[in-house]
View 1 (cartoon, rainbow, N blue to C red):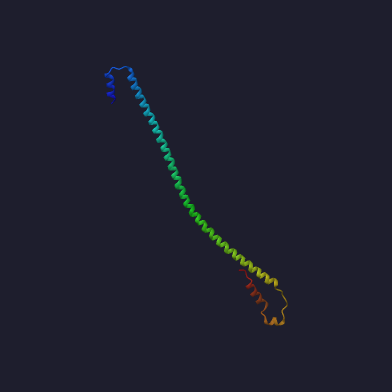
View 2: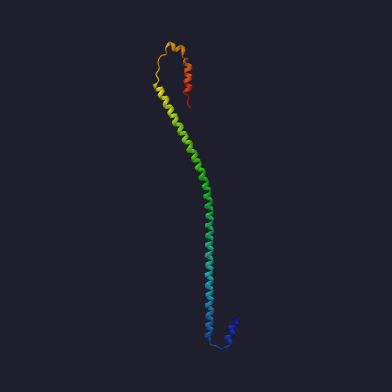
Length: 143
């Protein structure tokens, strides 16, 4: 193609103006091609940078999703443990309230109690002091 253009210009004896115009066109098209090449390189570079950032974001997302899964399992285990502890505490509070009620009842009985000397009939018909104390100790033992 170039050779035919050059033959055309050499066959016809023209002045320097067409040659200058041809040189200018070649220069403009060459510069335009270089500019487009630079723009393409910049676009490719930006694309690769964006792709790298996107891949990094995907990696962070995958890691975060894995962390969410692990934390969900830990949360479920923690909730089960909390429910178990709450149940144990409720049972312990119920036992404590029952023990406090029993202690109050025992104190009421002991406060109402008064001692008197035993009569001779009681001394002969009622069990001895040692057996009574053993029975009372057995009844009053801690739970």
